[in-house]
Image 1: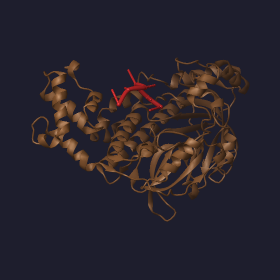
Image 2 (image 1 turned 180 degrees about the vertical axis):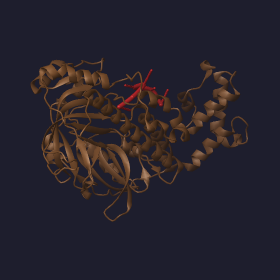
Image 3 (image 1 turned 135 degrees about the vertical axis):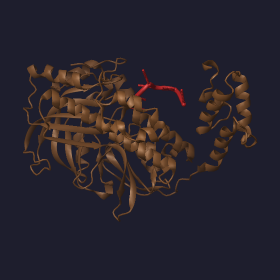
Image 4 (image 1 turned 90 degrees about the vertical axis):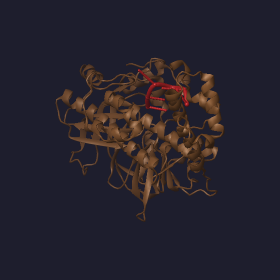
Length: 474
DNA sequence: ATGTGC
């Protein structure tokens, strides 16, 4: 019964390790010991964990014992290398020491091939945000990040890019009608091929995530995610879209894979940390070998989450195009939280993790957003091997969310936005423009990595209003 | 990032 159901926490208290044994124990108790008291169950399970070998052949408890024993055999303790592989840093003067420290730990992993630190780097879990890490046949869930497939997407329109007083309410209405933030979802979610993918039926964790993925498709979530109208200005006449130099009305979106990716990340991070034991300072860098079932499963699930994130953006832009009554001239998009199979300079396969970094292989197009009141950039990668074909994924935070809530007032943000002529729906002070680094300095630090094809100036922005904090609405 | 918890 619900009242006597054991929690993972209780099982850990009697000595159960993180991992499958906990789930097996819960299952066994529900199946064969349903009427028994909590005390009885806990005492029984404690005996199993203390001497699993005795219970291997037991009808109800054998599966728990198996997990406990196999786990012991599978668990290996990995050591860090004493020497770290050298790596390049871009814009070092603007990067906090915590991020550098995390990168240096990552460069000592036995599976590390190479790495680079981007100019917008700041501290994260395991690998810093703005960290690029190439490994040999291993994938690090925390090297991808919690929001798998977090990405940018921009559409450009052959429409006048004017934002006068009369047109503001029109753009605000389009944003309100065609995007959903926070917990909100569309009443009638659009279908998409990604929802029919076989992985949803083939991988256990995905079975339980499909319904919510269906409900949340086309939504943006929270945090630093946004959908905005603005002015794109193409400055490179030799661009691959055939766009003449000049100004365009543009829609820019930033979001990821919602609950789907978050739960995939959580599941496989736990699994990796369970199977791949590392010294405390590196524990979040636990990896999955790509030749194992878990590693292959994560790879498939990660790619599904990436495609789902992409689908969400495409639906946002599709809804906008319908409302605008125009087809976009071009769409530019890129993941910036993901892992790819790529090749090093000698042609060997490497697994490149970009955790808050823009792919910038030669000729690869991408978007590097600034802040609400500073421009973003449409960029073309230069294929710089020293940066592992990468660039920053934005300006980078200069102030934590918590600090922003302490230091910045709603009025300050309001007057800052007013002065810049930017109109905002939603957002909190923790996403105020002043919490970000100067994008121009960041771009200056990565001139060898990308060339600028165009700029984007936000005009009407929608973010997730966070009612717990001062809401900025102007 | 995430129904922000395990």
